[in-house]
Length: 159
Image (cartoon, rainbow, N blue to C red; front, side):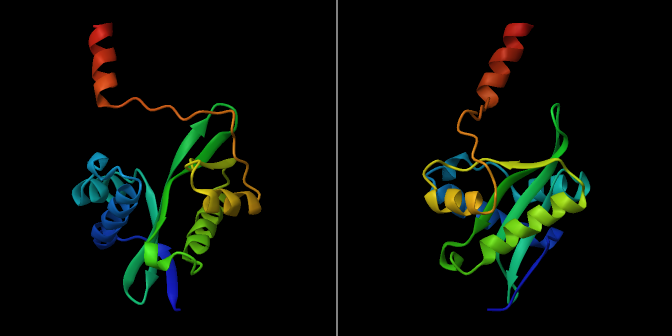
Protein backbone atom coordinates (compact mmCIF):
# COMPACT_ATOMS: atom_id res chain seq x y z
CA UNK A 1 0.00 0.00 0.00
CA UNK A 2 1.34 3.41 -0.97
CA UNK A 3 0.68 6.17 1.52
CA UNK A 4 2.10 9.51 2.56
CA UNK A 5 1.94 11.12 5.97
CA UNK A 6 1.92 14.87 5.46
CA UNK A 7 0.73 18.09 7.01
CA UNK A 8 -2.92 18.71 6.25
CA UNK A 9 -3.96 21.42 3.85
CA UNK A 10 -7.02 23.61 4.10
CA UNK A 11 -8.70 21.53 1.39
CA UNK A 12 -8.26 18.38 3.53
CA UNK A 13 -10.58 19.67 6.24
CA UNK A 14 -13.79 18.10 4.84
CA UNK A 15 -12.08 14.69 5.01
CA UNK A 16 -10.75 15.47 8.49
CA UNK A 17 -14.28 16.28 9.64
CA UNK A 18 -15.50 12.98 8.14
CA UNK A 19 -12.91 11.17 10.26
CA UNK A 20 -13.93 13.09 13.38
CA UNK A 21 -17.56 12.20 12.76
CA UNK A 22 -16.65 8.55 12.09
CA UNK A 23 -14.88 8.30 15.45
CA UNK A 24 -17.72 10.06 17.28
CA UNK A 25 -20.25 7.70 15.70
CA UNK A 26 -18.14 4.69 16.71
CA UNK A 27 -18.16 6.00 20.30
CA UNK A 28 -21.92 6.73 20.18
CA UNK A 29 -21.33 10.49 20.46
CA UNK A 30 -22.05 11.71 16.93
CA UNK A 31 -24.57 14.26 18.21
CA UNK A 32 -21.78 15.86 20.29
CA UNK A 33 -19.77 16.89 17.21
CA UNK A 34 -20.34 20.61 16.78
CA UNK A 35 -17.21 21.58 14.87
CA UNK A 36 -17.58 22.43 11.17
CA UNK A 37 -15.26 22.51 8.19
CA UNK A 38 -15.26 26.31 8.52
CA UNK A 39 -14.19 25.98 12.18
CA UNK A 40 -11.36 23.62 11.23
CA UNK A 41 -10.19 25.89 8.43
CA UNK A 42 -10.36 29.06 10.54
CA UNK A 43 -8.78 27.61 13.69
CA UNK A 44 -6.16 25.50 11.93
CA UNK A 45 -5.08 27.77 9.11
CA UNK A 46 -6.14 31.35 9.88
CA UNK A 47 -5.48 31.29 13.65
CA UNK A 48 -2.95 28.40 13.60
CA UNK A 49 -4.41 26.89 16.79
CA UNK A 50 -3.54 23.35 15.74
CA UNK A 51 -1.47 21.30 13.35
CA UNK A 52 -2.97 18.33 11.59
CA UNK A 53 -1.21 15.43 9.92
CA UNK A 54 -3.04 13.24 7.42
CA UNK A 55 -2.48 9.78 5.99
CA UNK A 56 -2.99 10.14 2.26
CA UNK A 57 -3.53 6.77 0.58
CA UNK A 58 -3.50 7.13 -3.18
CA UNK A 59 -5.19 10.54 -3.02
CA UNK A 60 -7.73 9.74 -0.27
CA UNK A 61 -7.39 10.86 3.35
CA UNK A 62 -7.62 7.68 5.43
CA UNK A 63 -6.35 8.96 8.77
CA UNK A 64 -5.43 12.04 10.74
CA UNK A 65 -3.68 13.23 13.87
CA UNK A 66 -4.50 16.67 15.30
CA UNK A 67 -2.09 18.29 17.76
CA UNK A 68 -1.48 21.62 19.46
CA UNK A 69 0.98 23.13 21.90
CA UNK A 70 0.22 23.43 25.60
CA UNK A 71 2.24 24.67 28.53
CA UNK A 72 2.81 22.56 31.62
CA UNK A 73 3.70 24.34 34.83
CA UNK A 74 5.83 21.30 35.68
CA UNK A 75 7.44 20.58 32.32
CA UNK A 76 7.18 23.65 30.10
CA UNK A 77 6.12 23.41 26.46
CA UNK A 78 4.26 20.22 25.54
CA UNK A 79 2.29 18.85 22.60
CA UNK A 80 -1.24 17.61 23.11
CA UNK A 81 -2.50 14.95 20.70
CA UNK A 82 -6.22 15.67 20.53
CA UNK A 83 -7.16 12.83 18.21
CA UNK A 84 -5.53 10.16 16.10
CA UNK A 85 -8.11 8.55 13.82
CA UNK A 86 -7.81 5.92 11.09
CA UNK A 87 -10.78 4.85 9.01
CA UNK A 88 -12.16 1.54 10.22
CA UNK A 89 -11.34 -0.32 7.00
CA UNK A 90 -7.72 0.90 7.18
CA UNK A 91 -6.97 -0.16 10.75
CA UNK A 92 -4.18 -2.68 11.06
CA UNK A 93 -2.37 -1.37 7.96
CA UNK A 94 0.27 0.66 9.81
CA UNK A 95 -1.33 4.05 9.12
CA UNK A 96 -2.04 4.68 12.81
CA UNK A 97 1.54 3.90 13.75
CA UNK A 98 2.85 6.16 10.98
CA UNK A 99 0.62 9.03 12.13
CA UNK A 100 1.70 8.44 15.73
CA UNK A 101 5.35 8.59 14.71
CA UNK A 102 4.72 11.87 12.85
CA UNK A 103 3.39 13.32 16.11
CA UNK A 104 6.39 12.05 18.08
CA UNK A 105 8.75 13.48 15.45
CA UNK A 106 6.90 16.81 15.53
CA UNK A 107 7.27 16.94 19.32
CA UNK A 108 10.95 16.11 19.08
CA UNK A 109 11.57 18.71 16.37
CA UNK A 110 9.86 21.31 18.55
CA UNK A 111 11.88 20.34 21.63
CA UNK A 112 8.86 19.67 23.83
CA UNK A 113 9.19 18.09 27.24
CA UNK A 114 6.15 15.83 26.87
CA UNK A 115 3.52 14.62 24.44
CA UNK A 116 0.19 13.92 26.09
CA UNK A 117 -3.18 12.55 25.08
CA UNK A 118 -6.20 10.73 26.42
CA UNK A 119 -7.15 7.18 25.49
CA UNK A 120 -10.45 5.48 26.26
CA UNK A 121 -10.05 2.74 28.85
CA UNK A 122 -11.97 0.42 26.51
CA UNK A 123 -9.48 0.85 23.67
CA UNK A 124 -7.24 -2.03 24.70
CA UNK A 125 -5.41 -2.23 21.36
CA UNK A 126 -4.41 1.43 21.52
CA UNK A 127 -3.35 1.15 25.16
CA UNK A 128 -1.14 -1.83 24.38
CA UNK A 129 0.32 -0.05 21.34
CA UNK A 130 1.10 3.10 23.33
CA UNK A 131 2.66 1.18 26.21
CA UNK A 132 4.83 -0.75 23.73
CA UNK A 133 6.21 2.58 22.47
CA UNK A 134 7.24 3.65 25.97
CA UNK A 135 4.20 5.81 26.77
CA UNK A 136 2.86 5.65 30.31
CA UNK A 137 -0.86 5.44 31.04
CA UNK A 138 -1.46 7.68 34.06
CA UNK A 139 -4.23 5.78 35.84
CA UNK A 140 -4.24 8.10 38.85
CA UNK A 141 -5.07 11.21 36.77
CA UNK A 142 -8.63 11.96 35.71
CA UNK A 143 -9.64 13.99 32.67
CA UNK A 144 -11.96 16.82 33.62
CA UNK A 145 -14.33 18.59 31.21
CA UNK A 146 -16.60 21.54 31.76
CA UNK A 147 -19.11 21.89 28.95
CA UNK A 148 -20.91 25.07 27.82
CA UNK A 149 -23.73 24.73 30.36
CA UNK A 150 -21.28 24.49 33.25
CA UNK A 151 -19.25 27.40 31.92
CA UNK A 152 -22.33 29.59 31.64
CA UNK A 153 -23.56 28.54 35.08
CA UNK A 154 -20.21 29.38 36.69
CA UNK A 155 -19.92 32.72 34.94
CA UNK A 156 -23.45 33.63 36.00
CA UNK A 157 -22.74 32.48 39.57
CA UNK A 158 -19.65 34.68 39.75
CA UNK A 159 -21.42 37.79 38.44
